[in-house]
Length: 167
Image (cartoon, rainbow, N blue to C red; front, side, top):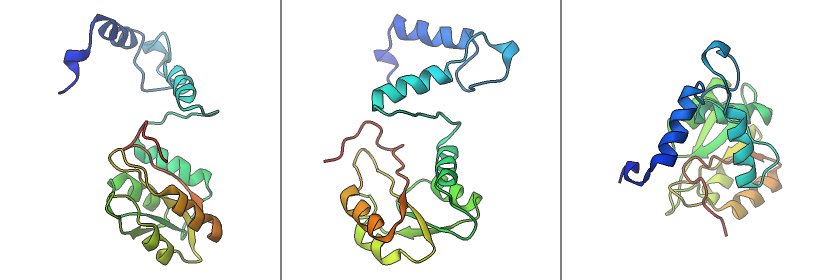
């Protein structure tokens, strides 16, 4: 089901209004093309929905991962561990920072295998990126325990499971 059959005039009018006001893809710039910016409004509403203090909308999942890795201090030569069942954006973001991607196996849930994660950590490991796949959360209690013990930061990629719950 593509979803269009669930959309009524309210949704259609709301989308048309967004386009008339100049779209939703940018937080600033293109002033002559728009009368209102909706990105900050979107960030505010997402923050409320997810009960978080700060929310930043970016242009893509790759950009989101890159911003997160930079915020966590990943630099050239650092190792970043992620999982085998994944989208290329995770690896692209790691490589773009000239860090080294380390790929670990997944378990039966198609999420990061905590046992393989623990075996793959080295002194150069800076960040671990579990990707919550297809609505199923990674085993975060185990991953957090491993990373805390080794003083490694975690950047969770939830693009495949927005709205999913853990435990």
